[in-house]
Image 1 (cartoon, one colour):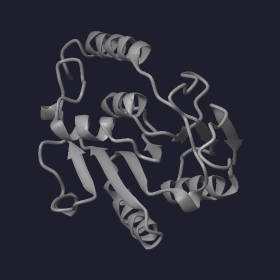
Image 2 (spheres, helix red, strand yellow; image 1 turned 135 degrees about the vertical axis):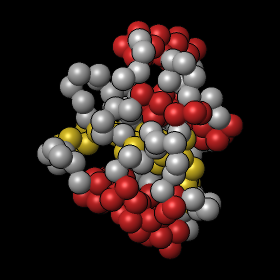
Image 3 (cartoon, helix red, strand yellow; image 1 turned 90 degrees about the vertical axis):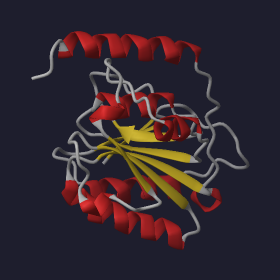
Image 4 (cartoon, rainbow, N blue to C red; image 1 turned 90 degrees about the horizontal axis):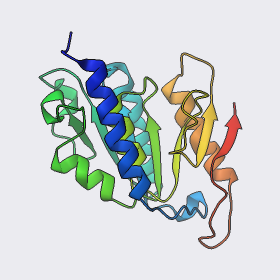
Length: 196
């Protein structure tokens, strides 16, 4: 058990809230055919989902969309399947500050990259990933609907039956992104919500 975990998380959330007050991001989306880049934030502790994400990477690659995944893996050593991949970077505990904030150059680069879409696959609300999703400079963010937090970080929210199947979730995300057409870089209404 980590010493003062609740206090540290509370302080981490406080730091995030202050950064969000200062953050400015223009929300925009055209349609799926104009997307060039997708960033995915993923709770990599469920290694069984890796095959699904690899398949998703392949599908997006076939559409000419660059996919970058930033995962969080809580153990010291990464599973072999997570290493030596250009599209996947995994953060570990040693790359977190005392208040669970990511302190790696990979996390900073991901946060500052203006992905056309950010897809959040952080169903357990792991704080370092929540931090990255919240501060991401992506122009359109997609995540799960959560009554408790209000999901203010997301522009499109999905509500799926729990436990959430990652493959079904990604299929629905792409389905709804294909349905949205907003013209030439028009701003879209924030916090659209889809119940699936």
